[in-house]
Image (cartoon, rainbow, N blue to C red; front, side, top):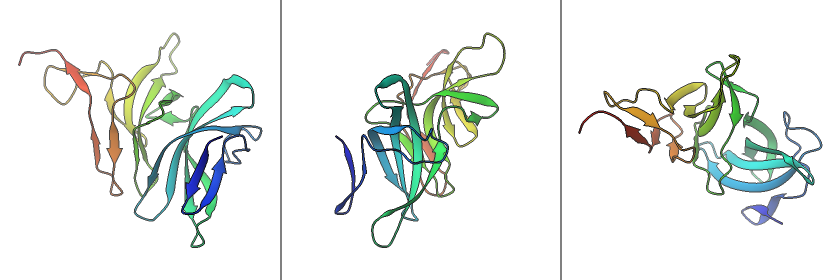
Length: 177
């Protein structure tokens, strides 16, 4: 069992129902990955849910909680999950690594590694770094360095601060040094 501890309380435990609007009602917490507090003291959790015993139902979600003065979690807010869209493309995968890199702004925008798939027939998933509804880098697309393209692996570190500044590390290819 994994537990999410807040101060001196176990506030979330694996095997219990997630209870997050937008997550299927029968899904339970499977794993807790990364955590981040914002400047307002809200806690964002990157976790995985599942329909108990069915690994094909695993779903990575980013959920934000208000922390009450008593140190309890308030109502959950689903920030990012599969089936939402970013810049008109469907989010088809989210990171699943134990040490997921992400950031969250005070406005609730998540900076994360995602897989995006356009609605065009035959479209395949492309790795992207996003902040909310903005694509910051798209695998194979031109980078900020002239003549070089982004190479995204899906585990590239990314962070955001409360004000919306974003930093990330990734690779580029092409051009001459």
